[in-house]
Image 1: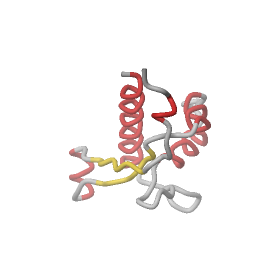
Image 2: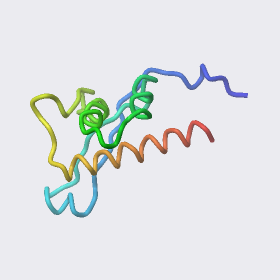
Image 3: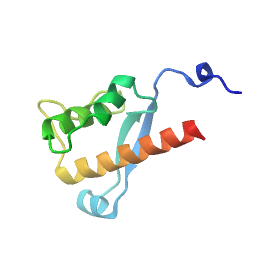
Length: 106
């Protein structure tokens, strides 16, 4: 039987690629961003309690998940992403989290 302590570890950055046809056509190439492969419980709690009608909550949650190659948020008080990229990035993050959760339960 595998022990949980064997699965625990320091979060590492994982690359995600936005390769949707419309995004590639609009921006001329695929777009790369990073997420942590493991998220703190506070982030999971924040995601679980999101009110989809509250744009401020969504902004805060997404800001913590869409990172650059140094692990710093791409979105901050001064910078944001175009909506088409934001939507594509959110979908990639959700897809990645779903795969992560599935692989830990298999």
